[in-house]
Length: 224
Image 1 (cartoon, rainbow, N blue to C red):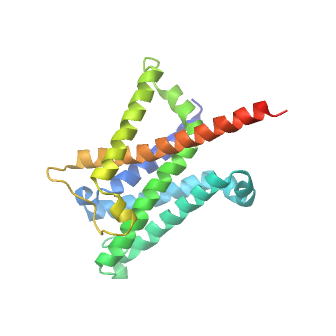
Image 2: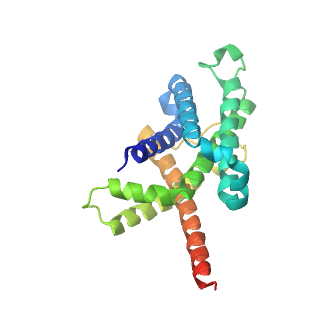
Image 3: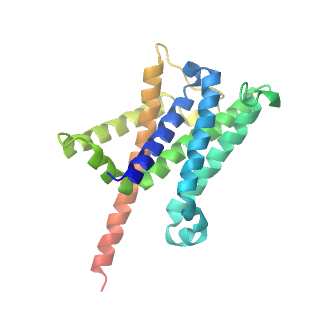
């Protein structure tokens, strides 16, 4: 695998894991949660810097790839909202703000944070055609492709169940200021549930984009 591809995959994986860990503030504690948010912010800035050429060609991208471009813009919008809404509820990094962390402000932060998580997953899945081959080359040769697909589908289905079970529609509608906690819950299960939700959104996005790309390819081959 080429070095720059490996670096980008590591960066993407780091952002995804950071996103999911940020949802587990109940277990990490507020200090870790806030500094992890700072880390994610810098990882995203590195990601933006690497893809600076895409941002310079934003208007042509809107014409050529409108869906991908709009998803990317919404991902950036919700992430920016999560960063800005974190300031009034901060108790460590921006403690000087003295926002006192009202439930309303926390609800707004939860809203932007959960939408940023899902949009980041959809954004990641839309570019899966470039990521998937690289991941395939990184896997050991003894891992069969059918098993990989089975695991991917199984994890996606579990992610959909976790989305419903943890009532994640509530923060997406700004109906709660806290993540749902189950009796007997623990940090490992919580992390795996949110990671599966991220995977489900990315896998669904990847499948939809692959379907329409294949359909467009068939139309081009049939055209005179």
